[in-house]
Length: 151
Image (cartoon, rainbow, N blue to C red; front, side, top):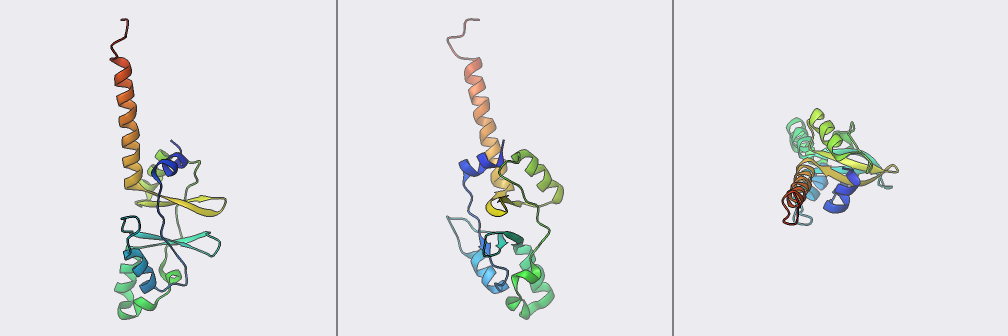
């Protein structure tokens, strides 16, 4: 199943931050709920919505541990992760999940024509695939055991 189908049917809110935000600003944005969700990752984009990195709660925690009181004023660009696994809407969702597992990550930004267009979260993608598989099984069961069958 294509990532585009997941994005169309699931809809994904993406929290973005600018690389020149301080960690304090980014942390405040991460703790604000959007659509009832609490975020654990922010995608770092430039003014043209081009992905340049990601900032996780782990990145913020690590900066706090290293810099203590000074961490709040550090810029996102100084601690963000820049080696980011991405995918496109045309990628197979199952393959994206395999790559995520291989790197031990839970989120993959979706990039289309060089710009951020969504986010695949492992938990949401697995739930989506489970629901699709359940629907397929229900349809097959109905077809196999329908009452108008001749044999």
